[in-house]
Every structure is written in C-alpha cells, then in structure tokens.
Length: 455
Image (tube, rainbow, N blue to C red; front, top):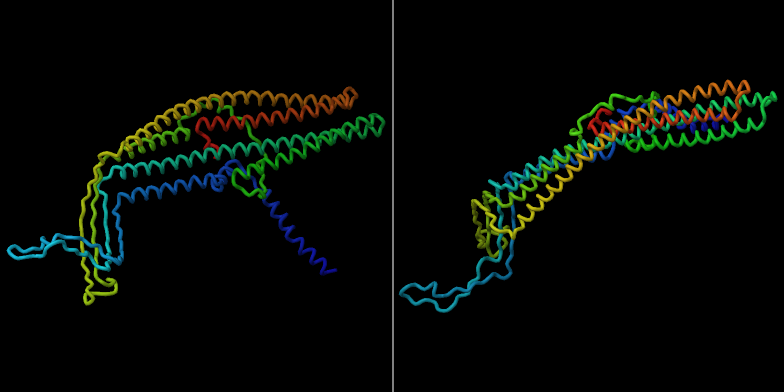
C-alpha cells in the first residue's frame, strides 16, 4: 500500500507542478504596450523587415566592390596533341644575291606543352553606371528602413485591434455572468414564493429556461474570449498555449482626439512613396549612365612555360623554358550605338516614374479621405457611447423598479426577466460602442501618422 501511494504521488507531481506554473503565469498581465513590444521582437513580419535592412547593407558592399580594385589570379596547363601549322612563302627567307628556298614552307608554331600563371589588377577610374548604382544602393537601404517602419505601423495596428477585441469579448462574458447571477437570484426568490404558494410552477420553469439560455450564452462568451486571446497570441507571435491576462480596468474615450488634426504627411506610406520616387529617378540615371564612356586601368603580370614536356615537372635540360611577362593597359570604352536598347530602357524608367507620380497623388487623396472619415467616425462613436451609457443607467433604474414592483405583486415575472435582459443588452451595446470607438481611434491615429503613441 505504501509503494502504491508513493507511485501515485510521483505520477501526480508533474500535474501539480504544472498547475502551480499556470497559476503563476495567469497572474501576469499583458498591457497593450507589452503586447506591441512582444510582437515587434517576435513576429516574423518584423524580423523579415530587419533582414531586408541587413540585406541592403550587403547590396551596398556588392555595388561598392565594382569601384574598388579587383585582383584576380589564373593558371592553366595546355597540351597540344597536334600543333597548329602555318604556310609561309619561302622567298621571305631569301638572302639578296644568293639563291634561296623556293615555294611554300610549312611551319608548326608553339610547343606540345604550355603552362601559364597570371595575376591581374583592375581599377575602374571612371564609370558613371557604377557611381550612380552606389547611390541607388544607399537609397535602397533607406527604403528598406522606411519599409520596416511601415511594417511596424501595420503590426501595431493589428495588435491594437486584436487587443481591444479581447477586452470586448471579456466584457461581454462579464455581462452575461452578471445577468446569470441576477437571474439565479430571481429564481431563488421565485422558488421560495412557489413553495409558499404565492407563485406558480410555470414561473419557476420560466426562470429555469432563462438560466439555461444564459448558461449557453456564457459558454459561447467563454469560447469567444478563448478565440480572441488565441488571435492576439498569433498576431504578436506568442505560443498559443501560453496563458495571458489583461488588465481589469477597461478603456475610456479620449475626446481630445476628435479635435487633433494631426500631420498626415508624417505617414510612413507617404515617405515610402517618396523614397520610391528617388529610387526610380536613380534607376533612370543608371540607364542614362550607360551612354557615358568608361575608363579602367589594368596591370598584368605572369609566367609562361613552354616545351615538349609538361613545364610543371621539367626544366631547361628537357628543353622546357619559362619566361615572365607584364602589361599595363589603360582601357577606354566609348558607347556609340547599341541598337537603341539604352534609349528604350531609359524610356521605360521614365514611364515608371510617371506611373508612380499618379500613384502618389491617388495615395495622398486616399489618406486625406481616410483621415476625414476616421475623425467623423470617432465623433459619431463618442455620441453613441454617451447614448449607450445613459441607456445602461436607465436599464438599471427600470430593473430596480421592476424588482420592487414584482415583490409587491405589481409586475409580472416576464416583466422582471425582460428588464434583466434589457440591462444585459444595454451593457453589451455599451461595450460594443467602446470597441467601435477604440477601432475608430486606431484608424484616426493611423491617418495622423501617430500609431507609435500606442507603443
């Protein structure tokens, strides 16, 4: 028996430890700022944006390499099974005043084996394409940095919306739970009256039906909370099995935002488009640079070995000879005609610039519209919140009066249950109004380019 008890205890230890860990984790609150920070550190979108920035650094190095000295070394061994022959007029070798060979002489050029080792150093002195490309690469890095900021703004928006969605579902669950508690208390009163013969059994059945409906709604609300929390965890990149809790205090509307015009020009979308315009302008210059001459300096030094045997293994006794050589070359390349290919590329780049200009104008107009709509929506939501808040107060007063009237026999059970349901509906409507306000607030901050305030 002792051994069996010990085995049972050992088997329960992991579960006991897990319960203590979960309890400890459930005590940790996740604020909106913490959720955003977690997402920026863990979410794949943010990490990919940072990888793009790192990639742009290597792109700059790649382009810069074209303007730096380039050193290369080559080596080769060649075997000629059959040497190339050439035919020379024999009279070429005639000595004036003396008879010489007649006809055509066949001569084989070269040796059966040859080896070469060569080093080249090349330095670009002038190449407009390379220099303009370097500017474009640096601008690309700035573009990726702005794109990372844009990704951050989009991530903040998604996190904030998911975060407030959790608040809404939890508030709905609390409303259902309060209404369930209230209806259960009413059921106890009706049960007491039914025992005393002051109420009918049908009244008790009605309260039971209402309780069962509320319990079903409570289960749905719990599922809604779980779904909303899981969505939030996914958006911030947190493991789904990690338990989270949010601060119990809700959120209050900020009326000052409705009067804050903000600065839509600060929006990252505008800055990204402006940087794209710079990139396209540089791309056009890169194509135009193809019309400029280029100048490069090259130095070459090498060793050449030739003979009837492999030069790497034999020397002069085997008639294998080595000789070094060097050359300094100043190369000038002047483009003259490329079949109008360069001109076509330039025109394509200019058309892309014109298309981006149209996109820029349309985007500015869309952002102005979004800003006005967000401010209007926010104002309407503020009015709705005030109205729903008053409805909650009225519903509470109606319920209190109905409870008093029911106890005095002046109101029916249906009136009491209906007033309880009306209060629950009013609270849910108020909660939904608060969520709509927070969503409108996010849209307005986005339109103003101030989403970073939520961090």
